[in-house]
Length: 169
Image (cartoon, helix red, strand yellow):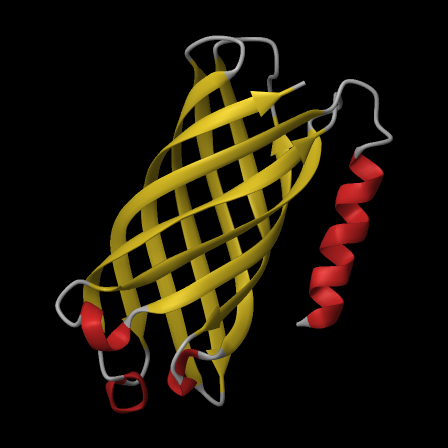
């Protein structure tokens, strides 16, 4: 995990050298589904889930960028017992940066943690749009899929995110 965090920090530092970069912070709320390939190992199978969190990202003038985020997720039926943390480092590509609507794709490393059964590494991918209300504030609409696998058990967190974005240029 330490080497992935170091890679993310180094990547973010190179983004500051790029002309026309923008730094963005965001928060989100995401209903979705959490799935475990083995009910016996994690305590749940496939359940309605809630995921919430936030992060920061740097986007260069070319549209490429990097970011890091953290959140909490879990099945709504047994939230008290089975919630877990999610942290990820991601790469981004923003297709259009000059309008009110900015479509983007993202993907990267995910680490889930909490109780022993969900302590695992994996990946994530997603796509969405940022709708800018003005120059500095926007709404986030995104689909994200986190997948982590250890010792033959797969944990998958699918969600549709709704959130806010603040931009600093």
